[in-house]
Amino acid sequence: MIKKLGCIILAAGKGTRMKSALPKPLHAVAGRPMIGHVIAAAEALNPDKIVVVIGNDMEQMGQAVKPYPTAIQQAVNGTGGAVLAAKDHFKNFDGDILILFSDTPLVTAATLQKMLDIRRQFLGVGLTFSGMNVTTPNTYGRMVMDDDGTLKKIVEFKDATDEEKKINLCNGGIVCADGAQLFKWLGQVSNNNAQNEYYLTDLPAIARKDNRQTHVVEVSPAEMEGVNSRVDLARVEKIAQQRLREKHMLNGVTLVDPDSVYFSHDTVIGQDVKIEPNVFFGAGVKIANNAEILANSHIEGAEIGEGAHIGPFARLRPGSKIGRQAKIGNFVETKNAHIGDGAKASHLSYLGDAYIGEKANIGAGTITCNYDGFLKHKTKIGKQAFIGSNSALVAPVTIGDGAYVGAGSTIAKDVPDNALGVTRAQQTNIEGWAEAFRQKKAKEKSKKEGK
Image (tube, rainbow, N blue to C red; front, side, top):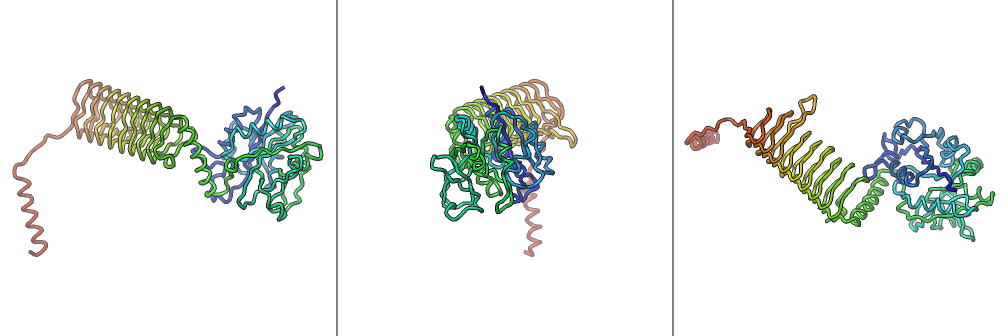
């Protein structure tokens, strides 16, 4: 019989060291709030229930974690008190409960599964705790092991003796517990410690009284990295980015300078894609096979077709869809624009709220004037159309299939298929004007300088 699984995610901390009006768990790592990473790791185990514990006056957190319910930790009284706040959500719950922390976004589903498997493997195991071997000085709780290899107790750093502080095996924080016993054991936790708080770390000693063992699942310290400050956030971001870079390279993506490329957690990239240095991917980017992203490009909310050529110095904003073999060149910006297969916008253009047909050519300096100060409007450019340099297309407007727009034109009316649209003034040449102008200005300059 498969047991049920519940997850409790602790997110009630004030996060004062972040110096921010935004709740700490909502600060982003790789484009997703930290608590979103934790929820995703929990969801990968297909739990029957997820409950998020928040503090008073944290409505923003409650909205962010929907559709999952929240429990309120009324008083700041430790991790044990936080879990107890979720007790009413687990009445008569016959299964396992994973306790997670919203500020440890690097935890993986594989680690959680391992903790769950060990908890379920032996009837005598009431708890599994995550542990990590740390050799540098730190303030983590120390894990005191028994002779049989099970966990005897965890001592918080502030309560540890000098001898206990020498222990390298430290508490990683995450707990998997027998849900039928968890809240009974928590009811026996006292706050007789240096912080006057109720600690989850008291559970192993309490479970031992019921002849239930606690096993330790050793995890890499990087996976257990917590965030308490902006400095921590930057360190965790760096680790997350390194994971993403390695994942994409192992999946067949070439990164010319991996450390200079930044991904979002949801970036999807096909095989044989080449990405040059200093490229940033925001949320919602999908890149098909054989595309090339040149240096110093910024891409978010965009789909890039097979064999497309982007950059250098390109900016693709949300709603951009770049077709197969299309080209978006240097200093071209797109937003909510569909660029057809084989179409080209090679340099210095803004294409917003636009549909550009297959093999159309957009000349340098072209602008789709999509906003009238109140509303956005669409520009449609047909297949194999040619837009001359320095053209302004005032939406709503349609340029037909195979049509031409003369360089320097401002087009506010539709141009039919295969027609030429041009709004230039008639050119006038005045013979000898330049020489006369230079002589006149030279005399003015000499007079001004007293020569």
